Amino acid sequence: MVKVITYGTYDMLHYGHIRLLDRAKALGDYLIVGVTSDDYDKSRGKINNQQSLMERIAAIKETGIADEIIVEEYEGQKIDDIRRLNVDIFTVGSDWAGCFDYLNEFCRVVYLPRTEGVSSSEVRAEKRKLKIGLVGTAVFLTKFIKESKYVNGVEIVGVYAPHPGDGPKVPDLLYTDNYDELRDNVDAFYIISKPEKHYGHTKKALMAGKHVLCESPVAYTKEQCKELYALAAAKNLILMDAIKTAYSTAYERLLLMAKGGKIGKVVSVDAVCTSLRDGISIEGTDLSKKWNSMCGWAPAALLPVFQIFGTDYRNKVFYTKFQNKDENIDAFTKIDFVYPSGVASVKVAKGAKAEGELIIAGTKGYIYVPAPWWKTDYFEVRYENPEENKRFFYQLDGEGIRYEIVAFAKAVESGRNMSYVSEVISEAICDVIDEFNNRKNMIEID
Ligand code: CTP
Image 1 (cartoon, helix red, strand yellow):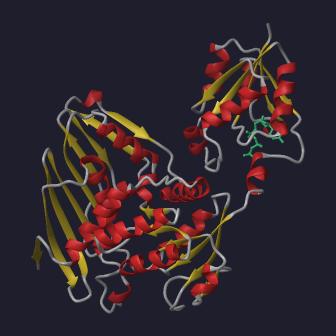
Image 2 (cartoon, rainbow, N blue to C red):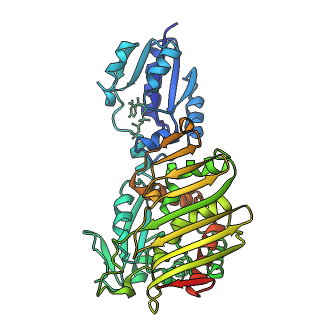
Image 3 (cartoon, helix red, strand yellow):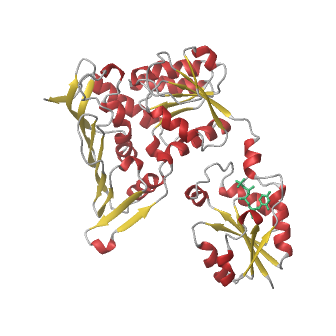
């Protein structure tokens, strides 16, 4: 029996795929089809698949051409499969000509002519694009625009910039002070205005029937945040809190490990996020245009605390050094939390510098994420006996922003909220900001 193997993503199965599978099968008696896992595709930079692994497998099954379907999960798996499954022929389309010649050592390699005029990318591109308008001019906006280009199916239409002189300008992008005009041309808004305006801008967008991705904090109080989520739900709209760290694969995995008992029972979470780059401590800086340390950093720093311990803490205390109290600009804030079964601390600063690491301590070991942990692709699980330590690496492209945009676009398309930041956490973040703004449980330092 001649065994043939072929691999692919097979997103939105088209006739180019089916022709390939038919010809692959005809090369022998038994066809094995390797379908790439979602994670493997992500690590290869293929983030745009419209269908999940299970859906892609189901579509191939339905053709009845494959005798066996396997999942391709890692680089180098092809050699393992060929050996393990006693494969005689490896085949793929001619778009890969030459790329797999190294497999000749293990079996025969055949490149089949690719079918002209069809590809998953084209099928995906035919779908209507999600048109997004931007509100605000913070520097971060340029990263968002750059990252959106990697996401098939979304288009940035323009930026609502009431004060055109503010912030950096992205060439070839429409900047307008006419909100209504932009609103009429978009399906969704990404809100990156000053934090005190998030609530107003988000509400306005939702009232106009637009989906919203809003930088955290979504509002200045828990009640306002709740109101926005309720409004979105009532209007069947998506509202997502934009914390890019939540979309980093390494971060997701370390969270699962912490919650899954890999380091025993978690007793403390310590997260540090600082940067001096934004210049709040530079003489003459216009502080009215700046985000304070709390709004700039606390949502990211609070994320692991709330995702691990939940939001029902017993007590919290702020220790704050103000840069300018009237403008509500803190140079440095430390927040200590006490939970029934553990403690947590976050340190955020735009006017002070510290090592930006995340440490999750448990009764059996700890998870260490080096700086800058909020854009992490790497972490270590460490134990008393260093021989048991393990290191983990997961590809992270675009600091998580492009995965966040993919999740937003998919949520809008499917009508299901796919945010990695739950509503409860979003509200708890707003609550912390509210208490900070009201100087509740705050000890000021000079
Ligand atoms: N293939 C083909 N003819 C096409 C498209 C794909 O023969 N028109 C083959 C590829 O060469 C590969 C297999 O089908 O052997 C799976 O390809 P895959 O990368 O999943 O499909 P594409 O349509 O090329 O996807 P994309 O546009 O995302 O790259």
